[in-house]
Image (cartoon, rainbow over all chains, first blue to last red; front, top):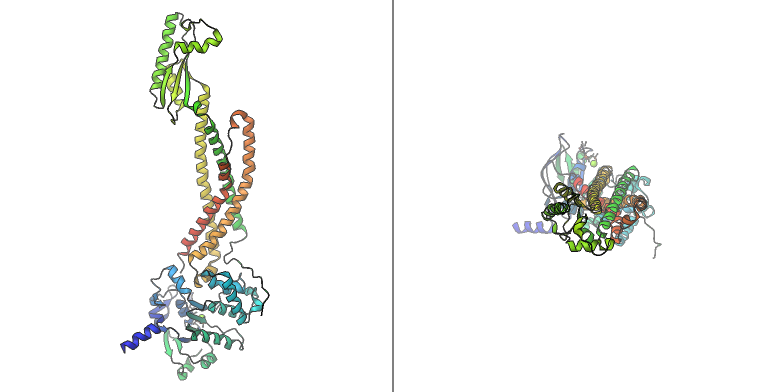
Amino acid sequence: MINANSNINTKYPAIIEMQNVGIRYDQGPEILSDIRLSLRKGSFHFLTGKSGAGKTSLLSMMYLAQKPSRGTVSVFGHNVNFANRDALAMLRRKIGVVFQDFRLIDHLSAFDNVALPLRVCGMDEREIRKRVMELLQWVELDKSIQATPATLSGGEKQRVAIARAVINRPDLLLADEPTGNVDNDIAPKLMKLFVELNRLGTTVVIATHSEKLIHDFAYPRLHLQNHGLKIYGPNDYTNMRGNLV
Amino acid sequence: MSKKPVFISRHEELPLQGGSTSLFLQIMVGIAVFLFSVTLSGVLAINSMLLNWNESILGSLTVQIMPSTHLNQDKAIAETLAHQEKALDVLRNINEVEKAEPLSDKQLTKLIQPWLGDGISIQNLPIPRIIDVKIKKGASLDYMDLAYKLAQATPMASVDNHKLWLNKLIRFADGLKLLALSVLVLVVMITSGAIFYTTQTSLGLHKYTIQILHLMGAKDTYVAQQFAKRSAVLALQGGFFGLLVGLPTIFGIASLAQQIEGGIISEARLSFFDWGAILSLPILAGLIAMITAYYTVKQTLQKMM
Ligand SMILES: Nc1ncnc2c1ncn2[C@@H]1O[C@H](COP(=O)(O)OP(=O)(O)OP(=O)(O)O)[C@@H](O)[C@H]1O
Ligand SMILES: [Mg+2]
C-alpha cells in the first residue's frame, strides 16, 4: 500500500496542488473558498461552472498570474507563496496558457506573438522560425503570419493564442474556453492537438461551456459551484447534466 | 519540397513611445552633452596650457628690493640691506620655498656690467638688490599670498608681475575644474532623471504587454534589457546631436581666444586624448541611460506579480 503510493507519487507527481485555497478580489467576498485539489502529471480535466463561477480565477492561480488570498497553491512542487520572481518566471515557462480573452499583443504579428514564449527564454532565432512556421501552418494560419491581431477574426486570434500556448511544448496546458470562437470543423482538430500533447505527457485543464466537448471526450471534470469545487468521473453523466451552464 | 523564404520582420515587443517622450529624452540628453562638451574642452585646454609652462618658470622667482633713497650713501646701503634681510626672513619662513639667496655684490656687478661697463663699484650706485628664490619641486606656491606677506614686511620688496598673473590663471583653472565637475554632476542627473521619467511613463503604457511577457515566462531582466537597449540608443542619438552643436561652439570659442593673446592661448591645444574624451561623451550618456533604464525597470517591476 505504502509502496504503491510512493510509486504513484514519483511516476505521477502532483503538478498542481491546492489546499484550503480561497480567492477574493480587493475587499469583496470570496469567489472561491476552501478549494482542495491535486492534479497529477499526465491528467486531463475539463473545468466547468456557470459564468462567473470562478473558472478563470482558478486557472489564473494555476498559471501564476495571482496568488491565493489564503491557503497554499503549489505548482510543480513549488509553493507559489514562497517562490521569488525569477523562480515564478521559470515555472511559467513550463506552462502554456490559452486565455479566454486571448491576450495577444496588438502591435505584434501573428508570428511574433507565437514566438514570444521562445524568445523570452532566449531560443535561437533560426530554431524559433522553424517551429513557429510549422505550428502556424498546422493551425492553418500560414497565410496570416505577418497579420496583426486587429486584422484577424475571432477564430483566427484564438488559433494564434493556442499556437502560442503550445509552442514551447508545455508540461502544463491551461486553456480557458479554447474552442469558443472557432468553426466546428477546426474545433476537433484543436482538441486533437490537446489530446496528443496529453498523450506525450502534458497535464491539461480545459475550461469550457461546451456540453458536446465534455460528452465527446470522456475526461474527468472539475466543477465549480457555490464557491466550491466538485470532481466528477468521466462517465458521471447524471451528475453532469444538471450542472452544465 | 522547398519553400520560398518569407521575409519576417521582427517588431519590438516594448517600443518606446515614438512621439514626444523620445524627443523629450533626446533633447534633454542633447543639452546635457552640449553643456558638458563645451565645459570639458575649456578645462582640458587650460589644463594643457598650464602643463606647457616650463617647470623652470614655475620653479623659481625673483624678488626685487628697491634701493633706499637716503642721502647718506652708507646709511642708504645699510637700509637697503635691512629691507633685504626682512624679505629673506619672510621667504625662508614659507614652506614651499626651498632656498632664498640674495645675489652677491659680485653677481650684481656682473649683471649690470653690460650697461655700465667695467670698474663700477655698486656700493656707490642706487641699484636694486635681487633675491633668487627656488621653490620646492612639485610644491604649488601661492604667489598672491607671498606678495602680500612681503608687502607686510617691507614696502621695498616686489615680486615680478608675470608670476602673479600666472598664479591668477592657475586659480581660474581650478575654479573652472570645479565648474566642470558640477556640470558633469548636472549632466548625469539630467540624463538619468530624463531616463527615469520616460522609463516610468513607458512602463505604465506597456503594462498590459509586460504582463503578457511575464505570463510567457519572461524574467524582469528580459524586460529591463529591452528598455536599456532602447534608452541607450535614444541617449546616444541625443548626445550625438548635442556634440554636433557643441563642436562648432568649441571651435568658435577657441578662435576668439586666439585673437585675445596669440602667444599664450595658442599653447592651449587639445590633445588626441582630450578629443577622445570629448567625442566619447555621447557614449557616456548612452551608458548612463542604459544603466538607469535597467534599474528603473527592475525596481518598478518588483511591485508586479
Ligand atoms: N480582476 C477582477 N477584479 C474583480 N473581480 C473579478 C476580477 N476577475 C474576476 N472577478 C469576479 O470574480 C468572479 C469570477 O470570475 P471568473 O472570471 O473567474 O469567472 P468565470 O467562471 O471564468 O466566468 P466566465 O465563464 O464568464 O468566463 C466574477 O464575479 C467576477 O466578477
Ligand atoms: Mg472565465
